[in-house]
Image (cartoon, rainbow, N blue to C red; front, side, top):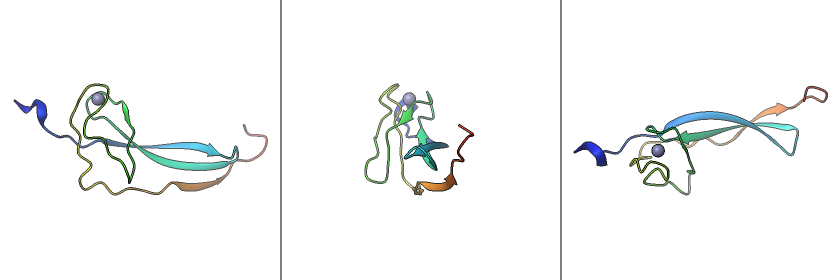
Amino acid sequence: MSRDREKKPVPKAETYLKYGFVMIEHESYLCPTCSHVLNAGPNYQPRYCDQCGQKVTFAGIKWKEDQELGYAREGCL
Ligand SMILES: [Zn+2]
């Protein structure tokens, strides 16, 4: 009966390199049921996980902008 219950996605901070040398922290959201990364952002939020069909709600989510953490130092790659 609770199969259609909405669940909140799980935030997960990830870092990646932009332009090959700028460290960026980006917040992703994972499906609370299967941990699949949801392709969501301020302008688009899926209503269901495309892997397991879990209904998700982004209500109340505060979107974080990508954060620059600094420059990756040469020689430490
Ligand atoms: Zn899922």
